[in-house]
Length: 75
Image (cartoon, rainbow, N blue to C red):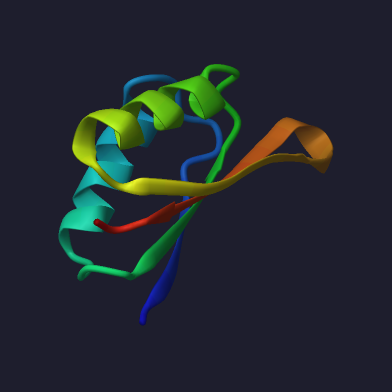
């Protein structure tokens, strides 16, 4: 299993989702992608993205400085 981190802090919607989609395409089933984002809509956007694509949203938390940490598992 591969674990990868994608830093999209400072980017606004839809760029965090688009960059995550591209990163996930390079991963295999069961691999995890941790996304660090500052866009206020990121938690809701990634929840919807996972629901639509079949990937799993394993964790969604807010870190210091308004950074969201989202952990996705490739379907």
